Length: 517
Ligand code: HXC
Image (tube, rainbow, N blue to C red; front, side, top):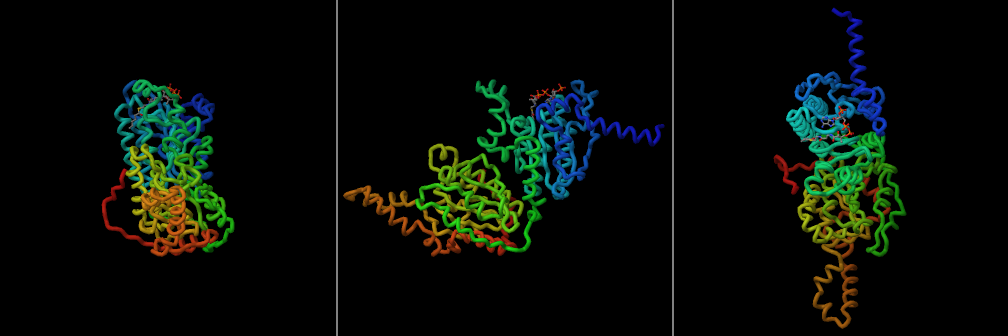
């Protein structure tokens, strides 16, 4: 029988063994690739001293392919809980040094156990991915492990925020766990994500492409839109996750962390009166408005590389977190296309699920016309925006800056979609369509029969613009609450947001709505 001292020594040895993961050589190889180890990532993620690892002595139970004798410390994934900015967060961090961070049954069970704890505690969950995917030796056991992870991702969805960091390979079906989570942060150069890798694609279709071209951070952020944030390295990814969390509530029953002092800072900014150009065809940068309206240095853009014609961002107004959806006239004149619809709808639904008020800034000439857009399903995708804004019960405020035409205006959260407050700038043009298009339909014969059709058309456009491309027709019908000087936008929003703090919007009971996916 061993002594207590010997038992303590054994524990020490076992802990040291687990700390070493796949061994010194593998840890060095990880560092050489500019990657942190699974433990280092969690230590950096959590506040100093506030981190507890769970299930570190888990053992896999596989026996096929010589697995019975294989020792896999922590079964290739470190799991735990701790504080980030003083708030409880659960996390898992795959250890590539242990059999490539591959996912076996116990590895998956550890992850699910942590997710279950996050769910019960009402605390966010962060997954750091660095894995070769399903552990081939464990076959269908690995597959059922993934199934459970996906199931838990779905259970947590809309209850606690879920953030995924891709800091290594994340290939095949494994990519569906991040895809089921709310935000994906990918480390450039080391992170890669795809369903079928370059070799499989070559065999299936003959196409040749490198892994980076296929699933690197930039392509996944800008082209597919799967990734929300690109990180320079592991440390940067962790910092992005920490910043993101600072805007989010712990769960769907709480409000986002407020920095409010109770005071409303109603500064007027004269420069806002000069942002919109005289010619309504000239673009301007919507960020010039946003940065002047919200609290300084609080705008945190999400999905910045994707569908740049629409901006989605978190920000603070008088210390309170809000979600911004804004058209960007510098890209595609701010028109809404398929990708912009998906990007905005997803963000609106996230904000609604987590009690974050929504503020729209509207300058939209319409849904983007084109055969590609129609064939791609702009009707179905655009409908997601109408659905998600209509379904959102958080405070909804819209500022109409310039163009607000047709269905695209509605899709940016018009009064008729349930906006609680709508203010228009004097430069607003709220109309069923742009003057050029309207005149072509209304006065087709008159223009054709005129001695100088070009001149006649120009006259009619100017006439239409003066009468209909203004905020006053809509204001007269109660579609906007107020026409305000741009410089007063912050004050307007401050009062509106404050007055909506106790908003209640009860809807008929149903299992769930059927958003047109
Ligand atoms: C078992 C694996 C593994 C896996 C890696 N390893 N992936 N072991 N199952 N899926 C092991 C390697 O054998 C090696 O072990 C160690 O991890 C490090 O891997 P390397 O290949 O040396 O590293 P690297 O050169 O950096 O390449 C990384 C890699 C490559 C690109 C991820 O390992 C790879 O292609 N792995 C297989 C990927 C794969 O096919 N996964 C299954 C997909 S199917 P040693 O002992 O030599 O150190 C899938 C279905 C999921 O995921 C379905 C869910 C719905």
